[in-house]
Length: 216
Image (cartoon, rainbow, N blue to C red):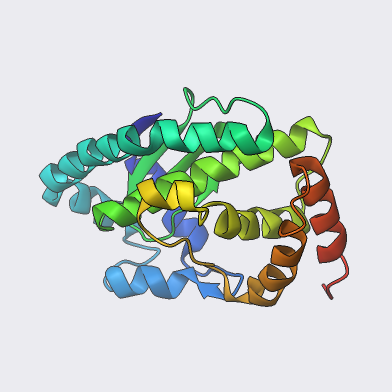
């Protein structure tokens, strides 16, 4: 996995997330809290200047983030293989540091962002969180499932359950918490299905069936 900077992506993310509310999380508020002076008219100049002023810090964090992944890579891949029964290939994955605390992922390109101001252990958490998403979606595509709202919900719920397993917590060191408050009730229900110790394919299909019962 590569760790890179990408100014243009940050410009695109600002425009996409400046008014976005997803799963009970107001990303526009998060952006404004960290960058009160940015707006739609000045965002390109603002981001260009920010990258210039913080160049050394961004580069230092980029190198440190690459080191983070080196410390957790083998344990993560071993646990993913154990659960899904297949290798997860991370060679084409890219982590982009971001000046915005939105941390989106892009399944089609197997890339994602990590907020550069997060401390090391919390950047660690984002790395494993997003890479687990990629492994989850790879497996779902392989068993013929198409992406929809319920699959997205399950991907977030799965991460909370899977990344809190003791073997992974030893290397992550940070409890995986549910980021989207709207999924709290659904997490409790899906945990009951998880506790049945079903194979991965059956767990996913049973969970999706259950999530479809919730009101839209």
